[in-house]
Length: 512
Ligand code: NOJ
Image 1 (cartoon, rainbow, N blue to C red):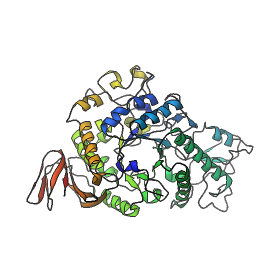
Image 2: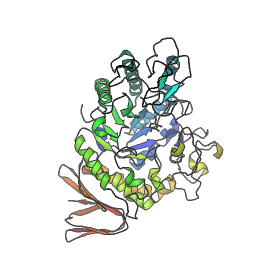
Image 3: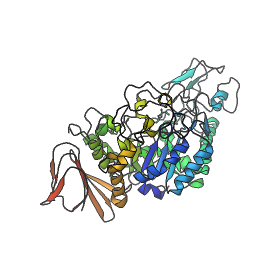
Image 4: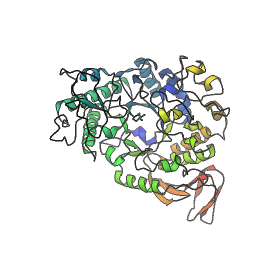
């Protein structure tokens, strides 16, 4: 495998939650045409690619991560033609689009599951993981049981209405006949069905996939060996039929996912990455209180970075639809420093819609479509000062999720017109990154200091840029720093006598 499509070298992704982005037909919910209408906004920010959360037919018990038909856009978002049109309009602007692929489970309403629930054997009997008696539960996994004539319990992958598709067991237990090997007929058929779905959308013009729970497919596979082998097989299929397709995994263990053939893997808010230490804990590193620490994050990042080498890219998102908004813990000036970090790290940056204007987490919402605590991070985009912040012309009660009610809620239009806004800073930082290969996806990184300030050097060819990130309110001096300050975010910085003097709340980029 090579290192992925060339456009990843300079890619900046924008994650879009389709139901909350822009509503063009006044039904209170965002749609595909709404995304197409806003492509110029995204391009103006400097983003080069989109990741769309699932937009397929679904009962929406988990906001679309419970797919009922992988081949059809949910009517509430529009049609397959609208989606193809979005691909084309994006390509016309030299942008790329990744769809969200949910390979681990479906909705209970998926026709495969309906067939597989039947007592008599059929093509889909082994499409899901069923035990051979309703009294036997699949250990270590939750299950659905007692809902049909089939005498068995079906394993679930996430919520209890998301039955696990059957890709087999890495080590089937000899005394459990229902645990099938990865190369048994049922698991192989599931794998081929997955390839068919990918083929369909890649042929339609999408540029690849973000893969949901990519590490979860093969069961009883603690070290991930079976799941890695499965993805390697899919990589071979892609190399042969769609060599340009880009793949990013929700896995959080880049040493596994990238070996499996993914080009990119996310650092996530769960697992051992210490990502939360930076933005989402009681004392986040990026708070000006200066009480947080980046040490463990840097240690974990370094470990991953060394293990992975040039096999692929580690991606640090600003947020996503599963975690708190950045603005829940950080104010706009602190977020500017956080973005100076996010946009100067190796790998491909992902910006969650609305984070560029510091949209807030909306507190105390009743759960919408299986969002629970995540609902507050999924509220409709705030475009302007108009009705429903310009998201929709429906009456307020019809909006998919209630919006931030504050009078001073941020909006894209005002921030675009204000050079001091968070959005303007994010836009400048992206443009700055795009001018300097050392700062882009594949420039290397060496950490020089993991405290506060955080100091690292990014290098590509003969270009070497020292990045100094000082989120706390205390100023600092960084010795052995000479060269030109190319760019600064925040307060003040100057180089005197081979030393960088940096004020609190400041980030600088120094060319060596
Ligand atoms: C991860 C997705 O990001 C999340 O939103 C979803 O609920 C689960 N996977 C289950 O698909």
